[in-house]
Amino acid sequence: MRRSRFFVFAILAIMATGVFLILDGCSSGDGKSAGKVMSETFPVIDEAYSIIKEKAVYPIDGDRLVEGALRGMADVIGDPYSTYLSEEEAVSHRESLAGERVGIGAEITRSSGRYIIVSPIKGSPAEKAGLQPYDEIVRINGEALGGLTLQDVVKKIRGKEGSALSMTIYRPDLNKHLELKVLREVIPVKTVSAELMEVRGEKFGYIALTMFGDETAEEWKKATDKMIAEGARALVIDVRGNPGGYLRAVGEVAGSLLQDDTVFAYMQNAKGELTPLVVEPSEKFKFDEKLKKMPVVLLQDKGSASASEVLSGAIKDLRRGFIIGQKSFGKGTVQDTTELSNGGEMKLSTHKWLTPKETWIHGKGVDADLVSEQAKLFTEHIRFTTDVYKAGDYHDDIAYAQRLLAGLGYSVQRDDGYFDESTALAVHDFRVANKVEIDSIMDRKFFTKLREKVDAYRKDQANDKQLQVAVGYVHHLLTE
Image 1 (cartoon, rainbow, N blue to C red):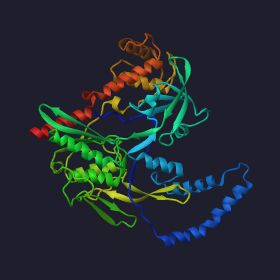
Image 2: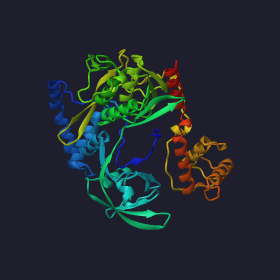
Image 3: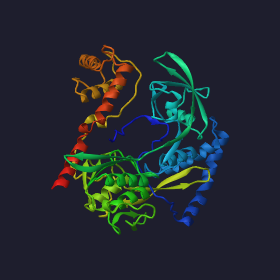
Image 4: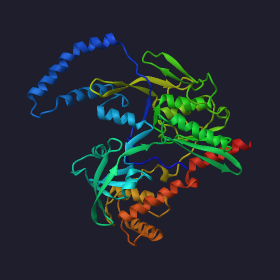
């Protein structure tokens, strides 16, 4: 069953990538005009560079000045998807779409200036080394972490496969510091998860795609082959919270569901010229032909973006399936990434993409055929806190807990972060019901149990309102 993807945690083996649709090649513009502009403006850039280096009271490295100029050029375009990436950022960006990463396999978060282990991934190097939830990372390879950002800490933890990492951690349950060694390993990253579901004798496949990465098409083939072999007669495709990815990956998935020679999208360049993207037999994968005739229901929400919208746009315009959920995000541009001589990359929006009916969904999104609101506990960002709150306090962590308590059915009269009497009673009742030390305060034990209860709620398919609507619709399709 799909777990909620609305996490605020930094995953050491996975870097957040935002909303994106990426071409597989790089395009080039008008080299002559570009060269003319650069030759005219370079003296001005050189002049500013020299003045800053010679006269600025605050010294700054020359490479940083160059990177600042590059970022400025990207920023002035006014497109949030066009940006300059430093060498480190470019590496992280590429890794974010790869099928595996090198790391220790643990989720961490920053809480009150401290870096806390949320949970180690099962079977990961972090779990093998003995890291536990709520362990506070104090030092990495003997260096204290004071003043570092979460991204800085992640950089220190990552490294080459097979290399060792020493960590000093503070374990609150023992009230002591521990020295641990962790061996960095390759952490596989799955973008497709699948489950055979059966409702009143009718079998169908549920397949969730978290993004469209390097290995998505292969994972999709394995999942669909398995579902068909197990007797699935329809598919529920879940792209809720899927931010996008590679165009070729979504092309393979869409192509497996559509007849050959079907236009599933159009690319439009800066001159307005349209290029159709046509379904062709896959050179790499031989998908089961049953997929092209199987009933399809697609689940989407406002977090479904870019490459996800290519799929939903094709399904909608070609009447290949039925879309349930909410209007999608609305990103209709495609980015080319070009390597620069300093090791960085310029990511630039070079094309628009249009649906098969030549609709540009940018800023508009793809409408659901049947609008279905999700239960609030599925859309709440799960946070991690180690602070203690009591009646009379006011904090955003308290507002967060109030919302979760209300979602779990407890009577809370306010959700603005003020710890009032009704909140204290709800906290007390929650602690009693879940066998947490009887009290009326919000502490680590309270927040841990609250998170566990919300996780359990989300794992229960009966609570996923949108999925239940999809299940009912699929059953209707199979029995009509």
